[in-house]
Amino acid sequence: MQSSQYIPEPVFLILNRLKAAGHEACLVGGCVRDLFCGVIPQDYDIVTSARPDEVSSLFSHTIPVGISFGVLIVIEGGQKYEVATFRTEGGYADGRRPAQVAFATAEEDVRRRDFTINGLLFDPESGRLIDYVGGCRDIENRIVRTIGDPERRFAEDHLRMLRAVRFAANLSYDIDGNTLKAIRGHIKDINRISAERTRDELCKLLTRGGARRGMELLAETALLGEIMPEVAALQGIEQPETFHPEGDVWEHTLMMLSLLPAEGETDSRLAWSVIMHDLGKAVTRTVDERGVHFYGHVQRGEEIARQIMERLRFSGADMETILALIRCHMLFMNVKEMRPSRLKRFLRMPDFALHLQLHRLDCLGSHGMFDNYEFCRAKLSEMTEEELRPPRLITGYDLMEMGFTPGPVFARILQEVEDAQLNGTISSAEDARQLVLSSWGQ
Image 1: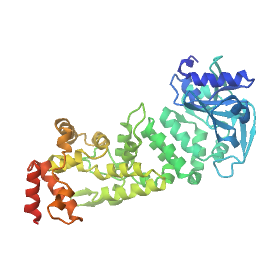
Image 2 (image 1 turned 45 degrees about the vertical axis):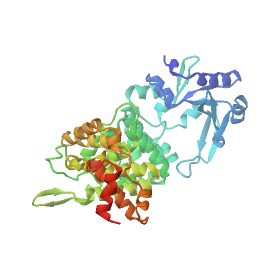
Image 3 (image 1 turned 90 degrees about the horizontal axis):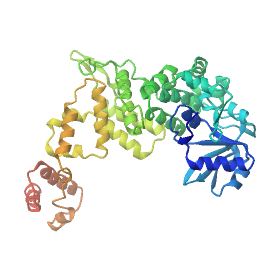
Image 4 (image 1 turned 90 degrees about the vertical axis):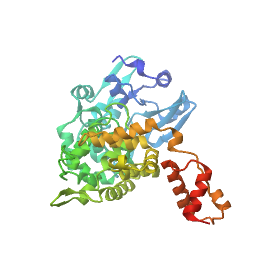
């Protein structure tokens, strides 16, 4: 494996210091898989025969994040690296944490891990790759397979079912037949996992490539119906062929997901808005003599999306951005008819670049018409920052000087003045004063 040049110098320092003290030490897990495939890892995990107290004594900056499991964070070169003692685990009473941990050999440590593709050990100094579980073969065959009995692996940590789907999606691998069967047999157990762990795994599935494949596998395994039944409900919701020749709402969503970047990391807020922008269609579909309709689907979709995100413990900031993306995604159809004031307010919305990306994906995943998208881009290139956000012509203090009493009316007056300013009908402070006096008197 000729990938040692990808490994940061602090990693070599940690490994060499452990070995110089007489301990075994090597890289493990996803970083070894990535190196095997010629990919630069995002992080590096180290395993060693050294006990936690021995690791701590060798390094000046450590954090005991999981000391009872033999796990420390070692800080070198300003970066954090996880260093874990070889161990075995047992007695997973809660479907997440082992009740017993015992220090062990390198092979025993590997055999308690989740998937063969994450079970490789690598010593970058010697170039030795150690494979006790057939991980190299499964990487070459692009297979996600549990180490040992899948029933046991998923009983130990239920999140591994979701991780299997995520790895298959992100890596463009298939899931081994027995592993897939075990997932289908344990789908109810996913509800025992904390909302935060589930959310984080779904975010990785949606943002690291293969999002469409990931959603298809979630549906195929029935995990989707357990985690997000509101999304599963989009399957079979037929749409008017004129605007949606691609098919039902589910297929439309999958097509949009397939258009997310295959490399790099997608903004999670954009990915989640793709998943949830049409949720309301599952509960608002009606048919009459004029065809199929989804009256009120945006409002209902926003309500449903909020319920999902509250359930999965999204941050307030991410939730509000995603809800805004859902709320505004249908406004693009009216941009050419908007008055200048409304258009400018629309174009200067927070995170408008995300709104524009969602609209583009919406078009690509359906009718393919980009006139409103191009219109917005053209307007953004034409307008200066001052045109979009001109300085105020009048303030609340000015209104008080004119004799107005502070209160809710101030907001209405100031908006009317800004509307006129954005529409180009006034351009000076005196124009603003005259407008206020003529409209509101005093």
